[in-house]
Length: 293
Image (cartoon, rainbow, N blue to C red; front, side, top):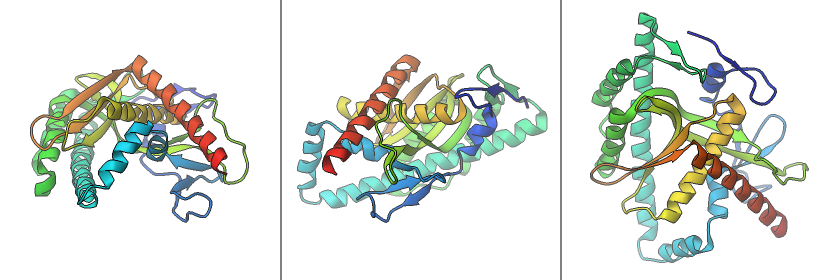
């Protein structure tokens, strides 16, 4: 297997090893609410990071917040929310199992045959036919999802089997400080953002792409998709910051209760737009923290 050296931020890194290092969460989760009334993460240098999803929720358009507030006042809204979270978690876990098992099977087979290649992007790939075989085996051996999540899980599994041709990382963690970030550098000040991306994959022989799974009983609005795209932008920025890898784009795959999932694609230029949008939202978030202090 080849080694490729990049210098994305004046630091020489082995790209493949840097990506592998993101499988482990490198920050400490803090639920104490002592400094902030929400969960934060801390690194070894004392820097504090808010989660990507928290910043998205806090800076969402007011009409979106109002709609959520109205929905929360409806009877049984809490039960519906819990059910949606449960089936979403189960469908995500099912997709994660398939990808991790498929990656392991493909890796073992490619190692035995010595068929790895290293692309111009410094990522190692085994033949797509090996990946296809491995994913099919993983799907066949996957645990049966719960009845409530089965339709959603099948939708994600069908996309995985029909579209993914290389698996680079599954459930990888990122953290970074957005460009032009506004922070005062004092102790316990928010330094940046942190989150976990569902996977980095090739789709139909091209990639790598950031991919985010979603589940929804109803069709998602364009405003909600904008939230998802900004989320992918944050993951792409964190990935580049930590590894030097620049995704070619992003996919948002929204599983439905029945039928094929809705698939939205961002090319590299649109993804860059949403990277910049998320960075602006981070600064809006920081401004609001200062106003509330």
